[in-house]
Image 1 (cartoon, rainbow, N blue to C red):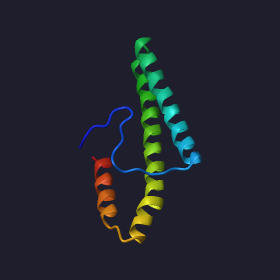
Image 2: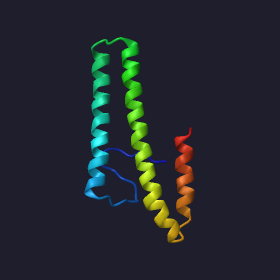
Image 3: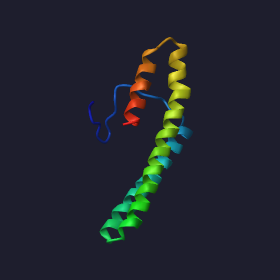
Length: 102
């Protein structure tokens, strides 16, 4: 699978409302802040377990983001494609879930 860099996107697109984009980008901004905070803790020689605690919180925030995005995907994209007879979307969902469970 091709690794995507900044500004690149895959061939498929999902049109989101401004509210959806705002909610997702707000979550990502908070996560980005948590990661910056982790970097600052390392640079400041913070105690290991304090960094681990903050890293765990950042990981939980990423997991929460993924759960929300996946739920939206299933309720929207997947359900719509199934109604339209596009069963390959189910295969794609299965592959995505398998990646998450590694």
